[in-house]
Structures are given as C-alpha cells and as structure tokens.
Image (cartoon, rainbow, N blue to C red):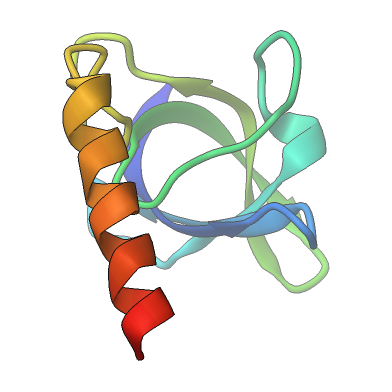
Length: 98
C-alpha cells in the first residue's frame, strides 16, 4: 500500500487528487474509493494510504484510508470552543458596523 497527501478534495463533486509520497503523478481520488464509515471525505493536507489502479484518464487511488498516526489536515480535538465563539462574535460585530 502506498502513502501520500491529499492535494485537494471537493465534497460537492465527490472527488479530488492525492500527491503520492514517491513523487509520481497526482492520483484521482473518488469518494467511493474512501474506506471509512459515515460521510466519505478527505481534507487537503491529510496523510493517506491507498492502492493504485490504472484508469482511462490516468492513475486512480483506491482503498483510500486516512493515516491515523498524524493530525495533519484535520482539526485538533483540543480546540477551545469559547475562543472560537469569541472570534465569531468579534467578526459579527465588525460586519454590523460596516
């Protein structure tokens, strides 16, 4: 199984691209090839493992799984929610005065 990093993924379109760690060409990544429960999505910068297959227009990633040993590309579970809410309130106040 190869490893790489998500270059980008568009949830509305259901696909994106992965940059393989070995430096090869970008790999097409379709949501149906993501191995996870629930909503199948990837985030830019997220490290992943995958298999590669040939497609009509180039290489495709299949059996895509998020690497669990890092938090890159995902939000930290230690985020202070009150700080985030203060930022939202501050932004909202700014919009009302504009």
